Length: 124
Image (cartoon, rainbow, N blue to C red; front, side, top):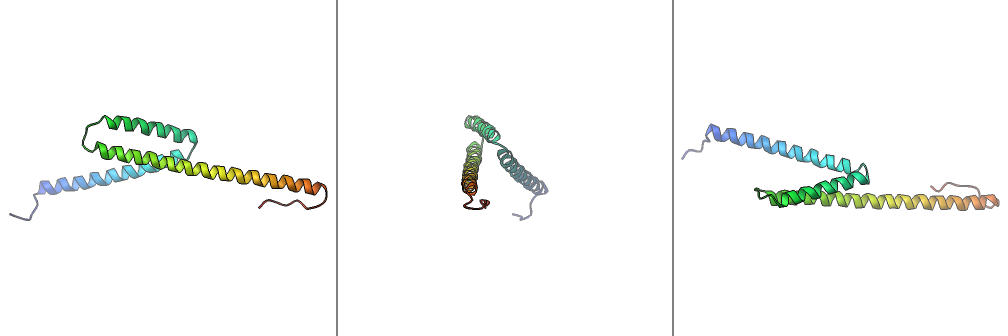
């Protein structure tokens, strides 16, 4: 047997590599778009979650080759968006609490300044 590949086989392999590159690029752009959209608002995150759930239902009824792998990837994307949402909610809560604490400290300073006890200061 010869170690040389048939020209048609080499052409198919080049095409498969090109398709693989295209798919990886499309997936990377898609992930970036999902993350960007999710960052815009809670409504956008909810809409993405609903859309991904619908896709999971569609995939569950698909008997095509690779359906389980596709299902797993969509589940992972949904979980990642959920985790980012939880992280954002935690940051928003922490920021809100810091603002409230600062406002309370400024209000206390105003009360004390009114009696001439302490000069007004920022909460930095």
